[in-house]
Length: 387
Image 1 (cartoon, helix red, strand yellow):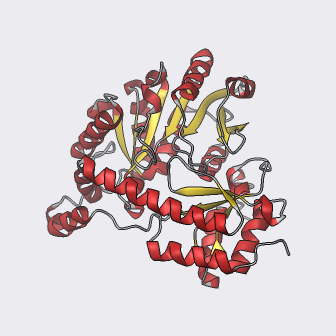
Image 2 (cartoon, rainbow, N blue to C red; image 1 turned 60 degrees about the vertical axis):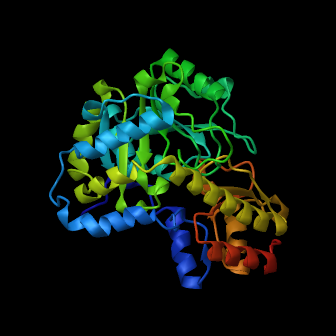
């Protein structure tokens, strides 16, 4: 009898996807999945409709169209001041998840340890396990979720070869400070670690301080692969356009891995994506203002219902402490929210290897205003106590 590969043992569909299915079955408002259901830039859609037939529809080279890689390099320079060579330091990928898989495959060996900071995006864990790497968690405690040098150094083992950071963070919305990134740089240099930094939410932040790219801090540029995505910045997650950029001596291997997985990212969409990457600062200003308004709306709804939403500094999620519901876990909290209010959220357990310190749920606010208003109304009218 044909058996399933050992690497699949213990892996299953994500809790996020499972909650989405349940929301569809029950007619619930789905705040679980980060679907980015706000309109893409009108100019991008018009450009695509006008020019799609004139764009090339064959493969691109494995590293991506030159025009796309050049646009990525230009945006990286504008947003962070970091210079990357588009010909040798940028690889187009099928979403940032494709960039992560190519990077892990190209630069790590089975059994290598990868530090992840709890709470973390669940696909990090599934990718690590799929490739028979070893997850090594560092617990960050809410509500601040700060990285400390003591906790990070304590997590390093003899097998540790890399760490994954995410700023702004999914699910907490934390933006790593320069001081925290200097800690990451010091530990990485001391132990010669690869740093993979997921910055797909770089354009969604709240407050005056711009995004701080990890590769600009200390010595991180020489050992860091940065993952980016057009899906979050331009509300086009279904286009599956991402990229990885980093030192030339690493990116050659990442290119080969990406080619082996999927040949190339969608070439016609790369051509259109290059145009999106050249949108002016007015677009980003209005984009952040929109998300700030949505963040405040949904946070006020959870607070009015007696729960404790955090104050994310970036990304488009709330990480809600549901202790006042009298529950012990986020699983219980999410179930009560779904059954009693028809609002779907993700249990905090989806973002941890071990049990979280509090019963958290994650709620996405990348939704139309009328959907968020509906969710707020349902929260106000539901019974949120245990049982």
